Length: 73
Image (cartoon, rainbow, N blue to C red; front, side, top):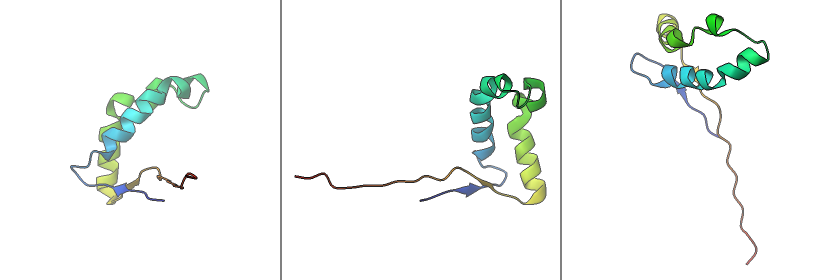
């Protein structure tokens, strides 16, 4: 299992998360979690950046879990 925590002024993590949310926005609206206006997708990345910088915070990206095995010969 491995994960990545990122932050800082130049980190791409904010835009990565904003674009992920953008791709999920139709589902977010469909199930009633939030409206597009509430999400404010066009400014989400920058808002995340400003908030993390103000708090000296990091964002933890999803964990990656891997497994391997040997196939019988």
